[in-house]
Image 1 (tube, rainbow, N blue to C red):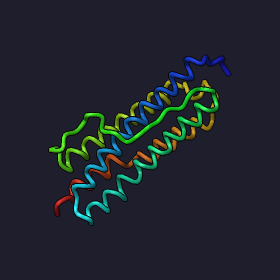
Image 2: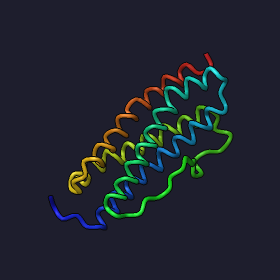
Image 3: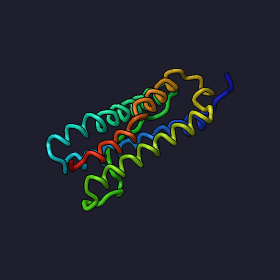
Image 4: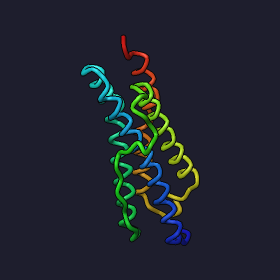
Length: 154
């Protein structure tokens, strides 16, 4: 295993945190969409979109925090926040678009991280497993969002 600097580990943590923040934005947007739906539609949104994103957000947070602890770095707090991405006038469709964009951004960050081989270089199997699990949880979110939008209002 190659020598990995504290700076390299911190960069890896920062990248995982960036993806986690994107998932937090997706969760916040889905929460806003949920509030604007009737009960039946809200239940479908929760099952098909909110729950997988919530699980991915939780897994990403745990992956970040556990890796930080293993390498002696400080963990940070994460919270579902839109971060100025949306205005109340966006409606359900707008909030879903924000959520899907944030999920896609998180996935792109994780793909780039995994392709960089940084998680392999640090020699941390738990980190690699956590990142893979997050991506697996997100795999169908875009398709489910499109399906949900196509059925909305019918």
